[in-house]
Image (tube, rainbow, N blue to C red; front, side, top):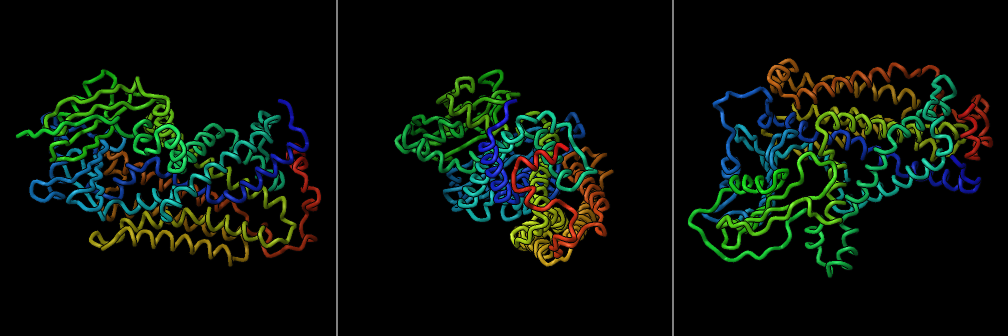
Amino acid sequence: MPKLSPRAFTLMWDAHSVTGIVIGLALFVLFATGALLLFRGEIRQWEEPSLRTSTVAPDSTERRPSLDALTRPVLDSLSEGEAAPSYVYMTLPDGRHDNLYMHVSGGVVGGSRNTWIHPRTGAWVANPDEGAVTQTLYYLHFFYQFGRWGLYLAGLIGLFGLLAVTTGTLVHLHRIVKDFFQFRPGKKLRVAWADAHKVLGTIGLPFQTMYVFTGAYLGLVGLIALPYASILFDGNMATYYQKAGYYAPPVEVDSAQATTRPQLGHLVARADRQWADFAPETVVATGLGTPTARVEVIGGLQGAVVGGTGAVVFHGQTGELLLAESPRSAGALNEAVQSMELLHFAEFGGTALKVLFFLLALASCAVILTGNLTWLEIRDTETRATNRILERLTAGVATGFLPAVALMFLSAQVLPADIAHPDWWIDLIFFGSWAGTVLYALVGSSIAHTHRVLLVAGGILALLIPVANGVATGAWPWVTWATGQWGVLGVDVGAALSGLAALGLAACIDVEAAPSSNNNDPSTDAREPPSSTLQPESVSTASAS
């Protein structure tokens, strides 16, 4: 591979280093929460026992309730007399989450309601108990605690993450194969961290590129769509989202009134039979109970990794077929946007793919941290306050993330079931404990000791998660194994493995050999003087020795 010119190399290096340092910890949070949210449905079941499902074969005489039998109690509870909510959006249960999700708004509902329904028992959970742990992780993944501006911030971080991935690849492109097979943990720390950064970065390069790109789009879609809609659709955002495959195309709905309205389940079944390879995924019903009601059934091709969505639209009163557009006829915008969502949310490949993506997301977190640690080790003899602050923030934000998350999971089982505003309490416990770890890291005397303490705390708390679940719900690991509650078992096993891994890492940290972070006297450090590391080429050369 041809090398970059010295000037181009320096520019790429500086862009990579500065971008990584500025957005590194925020990008770590996005990858860490994203790793957990790959199992969002399983975590939702873990924290809400009434939604837990079993894969043990049911009695052959047992029939699953129809879609109407599942949704009717929810709609009735949110209606007044004959008036139904004006807008209903639902995702159909599948083999991954196996719970029916409904978002209901407008009309007599007033605001919006989110509801999860067990597909076999019909049990449902609505606001405000909508899954405080799941919601906190989900909102944190795109910083929605700050509203729409947090979503834009997450998109910008993804955009700068793409810059970091691109510049890092260009810097090491001429030696990427050699670096992939080069890991020397026995060398100086800066060499070991640099090797780990390059090896893990090379392994996860396609994964990281895909996620920062799709994440940037999903975070900035509200801004991206504005000029796109202005140019092509006369500023009509609704048309943009229809062309992107989120909703069915517009169709005229004649006013009609029927004595017996068609059942939603029947309409979904008709849509399923429209094409042999069509897989219904979502249902959008508008104007229920009115003469112009319409029901959209949206889905993609069965087993497709990339591709757009199709739609089947029915009259909500008469059941008349108004429109049918196959996913195979989806436009370029539809296919591009929906393919990005399929990739970003890992909505293909089953559990094996989600586990692989989970491991790659953890590797991406390690890439970010080793990049920070390499940068800090190179400048270890400098006395700049920003270096010391970054060193401590890395410990508090990144290493402190594990105990904060583990404590949040424990709180979900420990808090009383009838407590008011559980989401508020979960947020307080999670963000309060996370802030506590950052404060502890900022005032601690030794960074190595801080990392070790936080890893031990996180490891112990994570090991207690399956214990808390067993005590609170009776769902001990052997019980969930016997009953086929694989989602719940997976969360417990994952927590236990995370705890053991954290304790193992803590045992590997030699606190006695690590210098105090307050000791900034260059005479006590045996590393090369900082002048030898100011040129980026020297780091690459040193790592090759």
